[in-house]
Length: 138
Image 1 (tube, one colour):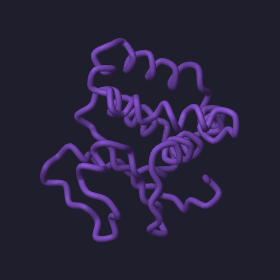
Image 2 (cartoon, one colour; image 1 turned 180 degrees about the vertical axis):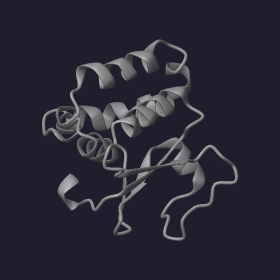
Image 3 (cartoon, rainbow, N blue to C red; image 1 turned 60 degrees about the vertical axis):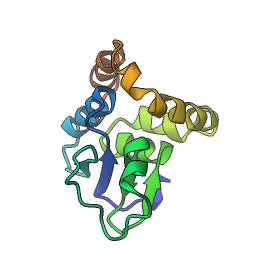
């Protein structure tokens, strides 16, 4: 999927969720080439792009992104592209893996549906540590 994406990639996510915010901010810190544009969908004044194929509620419920050519992706594809372009190639490959992708595609909706509850656990802190310490950006 990454080879089909034209950067920069505009990612629409729920910044009111500590888990989501931690992950996106950690990726943005590693985005030396400025290939990710983050848009907080939790702001009620947020304007949807004219080409947006879904509602604001859909953007709040699942991560979506639009590439520089106007193409929309969501879920696992967003994570694969965002991790890969910020230099976390091993994690990006994991999101795209033929073996892991079916599992991650099933797990992601559960995580997204329970993200507020999961944010009350140590998971945001652990996720930040995993990304920033164990993954080696280029």
